[in-house]
Length: 391
Image 1: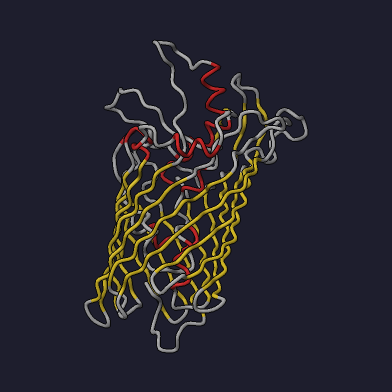
Image 2: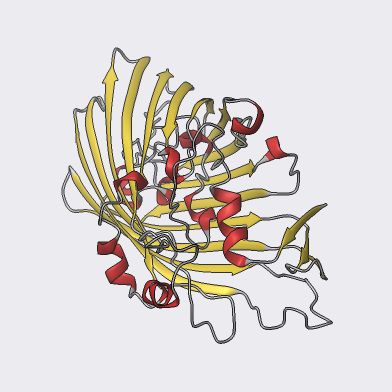
């Protein structure tokens, strides 16, 4: 049983930026946290094996989680993806997990419709206040549902637009009868993604692909009936590049790089030797408009840039082996790890597995160590000449 103090921001940030402890560092830090951090968890086993790289890789059913504008370039007319991700199992949390489902259907050679769902369960939690008073048990959960449209504007250039509904219920079932936390409610928000792809490849698919994505551009989210201090959601700007080298009809390899910049400003910090942040500074932060926050996030906050490096070798369009590395600045959570994965393809069915290689020891051990993702991909209505998926 997990026992947590009931503070929404701590719960949200703690599950995501959990690798913040650094035994050797005493320098002051100012971590940028957001609500609904599950939107920053990679929900796809293929990308999970490539260090979370996914912006400019070849299109598949899960493209909507990274870059929807890739979808019209798929050689298949319909795709469906399902993924299960146990989360933080290295900390002994056996009931925290993410489920994701995604699919697309091409209306013609140039345009496609997509839908996807992410469901994040935080398990069974016993709530209490700062004085230790028991507020009962609850089963917090969050989900996001997407609808998208993508279109090729030319043989090389594509655009995508995604609309997203976000629901975050962090008190589900807790002390409902007693009314101890009746002032709290499920937080909701709406957001959009805008994505672009430039694909400059030869007939054999050798060449460069570039992607640009602005994701989670939307409203703030609040958890009280009179939410005067709403939290930012994880707006993000992503750039990706991927190169595919084709050796012959059976062997090819692709490798690439994703850079993601969080478009959320840093919270205020104490000044002039004070121990706490002033009320005026906090009010200014929480009253900042969403659009202003995007631009404010560039004010000296380049330490919020994450990097994903990945490579994928494919044999006969049926077997894939993947390696990757993910880097995050030490003062923004310090998640740094290697990943590996495999993919198997038989007719229309694809199986993907990824594994996060353990790193660190003691209090510096990465709690994401040993994370495994399992994924199924169904590629339907492909060209008769295709022997496998476009991995």
